[in-house]
Amino acid sequence: MTANLIDGKKIAADIRSEVKTAVSARQAQGLPVPGLATVLVGDDPASKVYVRNKQKACAEVGIASFGYNLPAEASQQEVEDMVSQLNADPTINGILVQLPLPRHLNDEAVLSAIDLHKDVDGFHPVNIGKLAQKGREPLFVPCTPAGIMVLLEKAGAKLEGANAVVLGRSNIVGMPVALLLVRANATVTICHSKTRDLPSITRQADVLIAAIGKPEMVRGNWVKPGAFVIDVGINRIEDPAAPKGSRLVGDVAFEEVREVASAITPVPGGVGPMTIAMLLRNTLHARELADQSSHI
Ligand code: NDP
Image (cartoon, helix red, strand yellow):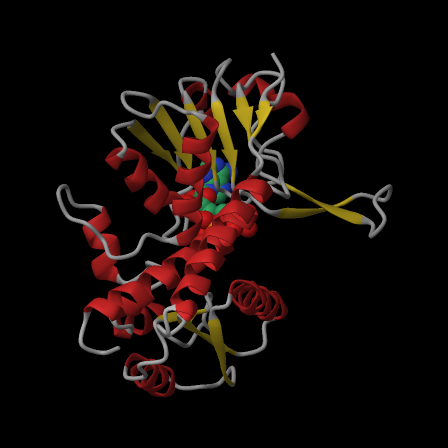
């Protein structure tokens, strides 16, 4: 069997186009456009690229973006003051604090300071807490996990009663995607660096999510025939044959696994494009929440 490719680029482009249409409709009605503030502390090159890409994506769909930079040595108080200022600004509907923050800062306190209604990354402890509770609805769901759920839906995965295995338990990907899968009525196993005999667990998975940051660790014989495989990993490996001397691979040995799975995401072009698309969707949602509240 050769797996169907789950085309994240195309699915993300469709979501961006839906957001663009909704923003244009708002403009046509004279309603305010959504506004996203990005907060970058320090000058980590990868973080700068991520923030720039998010701002560019906003511009493409008509969302206003406002970039705020603080020096690497900014104090906890300075970062929290900036968040408070953005909380009070009615033109800003979403606040994205680019992670990771410099080590001396307490990211939990910074994320907790964000107005719940502006938490477009979905990392506020209250939003994550609601995600973990039955019958509660978070205002926002973290972007990469939300994007993974859209990919599974578009690929036709039946989640109810399915065995889902999540490799990784980070706050950003592994844990929230596991919570979303539970909410979708899958039976979920979460694996991490202390899990014993990973392949024996992954072989039970109807749905396998790999989010560990280990290049091509999931091999063909780790995967149940017919499984849906979502590869979140983004790893750069040396490859003298590649134009830049290196290339990106996921956490899954793509060529082997595609012969076993029924559907699989490529890297790049799978989960990656979904993260920004979901951020745009969340920012539009934040604007709609603001419409309903007093602070328009
Ligand atoms: P983290 O480093 O925060 O978490 C990695 C997780 O994998 C941890 O839970 C860790 O376990 C677990 N792990 C590490 N090694 C092993 C192992 N050998 N066996 C089993 N579990 C292991 O990473 P992130 O969750 O932030 O990211 C994971 C990957 O996804 C990275 O490649 C990252 O670049 C990518 N990513 C992609 C995004 C996208 O948009 N496509 C967005 C975010 C991340 P433990 O908890 O025990 O340490």
